[in-house]
Amino acid sequence: MLNDTIVSISSGYGISAISVIRISGNLVNEIIKKIFKKELKERYAHYLKLFNSEGKVIDDVIAIYYKAPRSYTGEDMLEIFSHGGIIIPKMIVREIIKIGARQAEPGEFTKRAFLNGKMDLIQSRTINEIINAKNEFAIFPLRERIEGKLSKKIENLKEHLLDLLKEIEARIDFEEDVPEISKEEVFERISNILKIFEDLINNSASMEKISEGISVVIIGKANVGKSSIFNKLLGYERAIVSDIPGTTRDYISEYININGVLFKVIDTAGIREAIDLIEKIGIERSLNLSKFSDIVVFVLSAENIEEFEIELLNKVPKDKLILVVNKCEISRPIIENYNPIYVSVKANIGFEELKEALYNKAISEISADYYFSKSEFELLQYAYDRIKETLSLKYEPLDIISHQIRIAVNSISRLLGIEDLPEEILNRVFRDFCIGK
Image 1 (cartoon, rainbow, N blue to C red):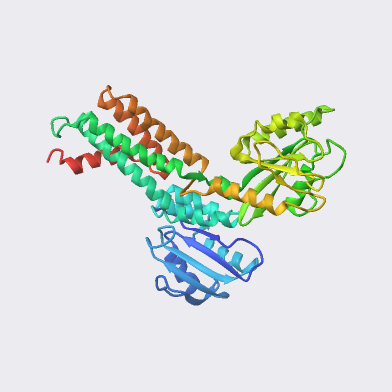
Image 2 (cartoon, one colour; image 1 turned 30 degrees about the vertical axis):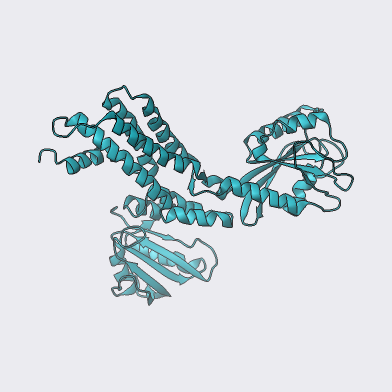
């Protein structure tokens, strides 16, 4: 536990019916006695008068006391539910600071929960993701992360790695005290561990995609109706629409929500031979965005489809493509090897089908058993690559194999926020092999 006591208005500043003030640290019991003039029963909602240092009543509040370690932070903790607004919560915080607490830094309550072993780094990161979630779809996967679904899977993986590392290092450091282990057994266990890795990697999705939105870029020739389609998806006139080619000279983006899934939709400059430098840069950005977006909505016009458009269309990966043919009130041309969605901005046709296609493609992209942030997945992938490399070390000494496994375990430990690997391995060796009796 840390030695100081922190306080913060946890419900945020502003006008509201109720405010929540949270206090954590070793001064909690002293604070309770001074502001309530009595001791509080643990984990019980008390209705009390809250006094200032002059003995005047600031407010009637509900207070709940949590005794360490049975609290969110793992420390003695107090939650006060006061009337809302700006003045009363500030007065209460000021009184608590007078007694010896300090203003909490952003995220410090969760940081203390992590430092005190109440949650691992994965769960700690997820708290902030839930607070900042922009769509409903994100909530349930994030809840699973907080409840430890991913942490348990990774801890299980780490257990397998540590057990194997223990077996190998016991033979290296205490050769005379433990029976031999065959290389065949070592590599059989490595193969089983790789299967656990592959289950995690193959059944995972990006946490950023569910919390920050699936990126959708609308591209196509100038004047095919991209900006009109962009506005239709948004439900209002965001992009300037004109019959003059080159109206959109740079990309613009907005968020939309389809059935609880968040999309970041990007309208881009029309692809054509640019007439000036600014338009040329806009077109280059359009093509660039299509490479890095999750979904590409490629727009053709039923009025006139040119050969260069089809050539460009064929370069878009099929797994991220949605082909849209606009102005279908004129005609519905067949596009060989493609199954387009026919829309008409003029007749307001096809936009529900387009939204459904976006939703279905997004669901296939983000539905998974496990969700990783980019940095977490990189640590997992790095560990997997190190273990996979051991398969080429069948004729090398055990200490070289051990080194690779140790690097992998360190990467997994960093993912969980644990750094005490050497001691952990040594403890296992002595515990399981009775070294030195």
